Image 1 (tube, rainbow, N blue to C red):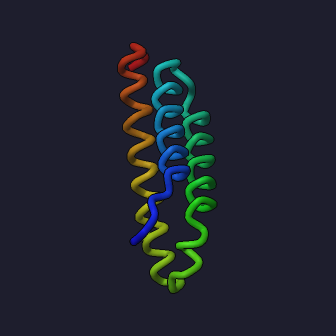
Image 2: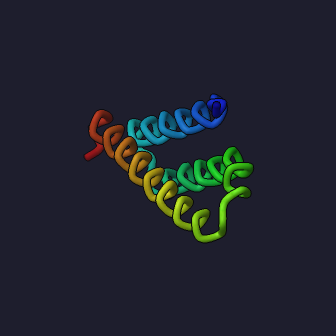
Length: 88
């Protein structure tokens, strides 16, 4: 049975909360992009063992899908933070 990676989930939740807070505070878009870059680096580091076991085509496909979804989730949370902070 596969063991859940709680540290990866906690890191993802932390970056999601950071994106929301950045939006809430009205931080400019480069700060949100920096948060995404950090989340992408942490994502690749925490999943390095699973990614290393994959074929390069599967790794590229899964990585692109995961990073795209990460960008969407962080972008939506940033936008929600902007809305709640009254910055829209």
